[in-house]
Image 1 (cartoon, rainbow, N blue to C red):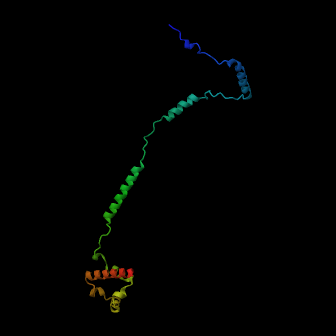
Image 2: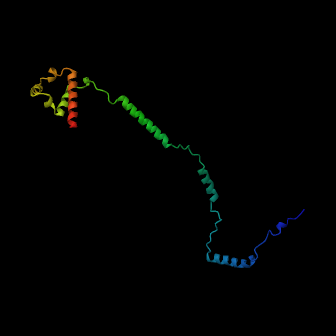
Amino acid sequence: MEIDNNNKEQFNIPSDYFKSFDDRLFTELKFQELFPNKVDVFTVPENYFEDVSLKIIEQNKPQGKLISYDFKMFAKAFVALAAVVVLLFYVINPVGTPEDFDSLSVSSIESYLIDQDQLPYYFSDEDLSNIEDNTSIFDQQLDSEEVIYDYIDQDIIETSWTADQ
C-alpha cells in the first residue's frame, strides 16, 4: 500500500498565527472587562421545552374545512337571478298589452277631456250646457265605440300637428 502524499500538508496553520495570538487574546479579555454584561446567546430560556411542546400541540389542532367563495360564482348567480326576476316581471305584467275599450270608464274619458282643456274645441255651447244639465251627450252622439275611437284619434293627430308647428 502506498501512502497518500497529499495528506502531509493537511494540518497547516498560518505562519504568524502564534505571534499575533497573544494580541488577540488580550484584546478579547479587555473587551470582556469593558462590557461585562455580555449575554450568552446560546443559553436556553427557563421552561422552554415545557412551553414549546404545549405551543406545538395547540398549533396542530385540527381545523374545519375552509370554504373559499369564488366571486365569479356569485356574479353568475346574481345575473341569473336578475334575469329570472325580469322574466317573471314581464310574464306577470306584460308591457304593451292593448287595453280594451271596455276597461275604460266614462269617468276616465271625461277626466281626460277635462284635463286636456279642449272641450270647447270639440263641443258647442249647447252640447256643453247639455252636459252641465245632466243630459248626457254620450247617449245621443257617442253610443258606439267607433265614434269615441275616432274622437281620440283626432285628438292625437291634432295634438301632434300643433306640437310640430
